[in-house]
Structures are given as structure tokens and as C-alpha cells.
Image (tube, rainbow, N blue to C red):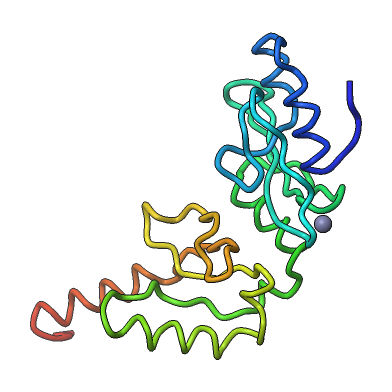
Amino acid sequence: MSTDTGAIARQRHYTSLRNADREILRATWSIGYGDPGFSTHLGTPPEPSTRHTATSIHKIVTDALWLHRGACLACSWEGPDRRRRDIAIEDAHDHTHPGWRNLPIFDRAGSGKGSKVWWAHVRATYPQGWFDAGGPLRLYAEPPFDRHAVGAAPGGGFVLHTPRRKRQASSSMQLALEDGGLAE
Ligand SMILES: [Zn+2]
């Protein structure tokens, strides 16, 4: 049993278990479905990245209990156990791109001419070189599209979604306006 940590070491071990029982595979840490470096146990493990790159690993304890950890494709770092993959992905960005939590959160870009202006504004607002370094882009979540999205930032980093606050207050205000104004 391998005890090496880090996404690469975990995935190398996982993909060495070609003939293992399903229960063993489920209980073995491997890169999360669709996250950077992912493959099935029959796939090829990823090569180490030249820069710290966020991903997640998971294992299944029971059907109701999946554990996730943030992990990195360049080193042996792993985050704490989490019940949700998105929280683990955020831990991973604390490792790969410290300071990301202080960056501004944008609304999703519209289509058409406005999106060019929107991108220019986002690039000008984020630190210089941030996206070229694989940095994440922060957007407000628009359910059901609120899962952190692999490769959706301009340099191939994640889009990290944040729930909008006080949405109810602003939509009830909107309803009041549409009903003909704030009567009371
Ligand atoms: Zn790392």
C-alpha cells in the first residue's frame, strides 16, 4: 500500500491497481472525476506539472461519505479532508495561488460586443500575469452552474464560483418595482 502523498503519487498508485476489487478502488485516493490529471484506474497517470497546479483527490468511504482533498500536480501537498469537492478545490488554490480569496468577483460575461470589454476589465482588475500563471477567475454562481469549472479561466485555470449574497432582498425589491412601485 502506497503512503506517498500528492495527486501524482496517488494517481500512480491508483492506476497500478488494474485488477483490484471495486471496493479497494473506491477506498483508494485518486484524482477527482474531470479534475486536472484525472483518469480511470485503467488510464495513464499525469506527468508532474512544472508549476503548482490545483486539482482534487477523493475516496469513497461509504456511498453517503465521500472524502475530498485539495491536491497539486507539482508537489506532494494535500489539503484537509472535506465533504465537498468544491471546498477541496478552494483549499488547493490557497496552495497554488495564495491571495485568490481577496480578488474581486464578477458576473458572468454576456455574449456579443460587451464580452470583449468585460474581459479587458477583468484582466485589468486582476494582478498582472495572474491568468498566464494559471490563476483562477472568480464569478458569481448562477445555479445550476455553480460547480468550480476546470480550465474555464483565460490561462486554463479554474473558474471558482461564489454564491451571491442578499439575492432574496434584491429580487423582492425588483418585484415591488415591477408591481408599480413601493406603495408602503
Ligand atoms: Zn504544489
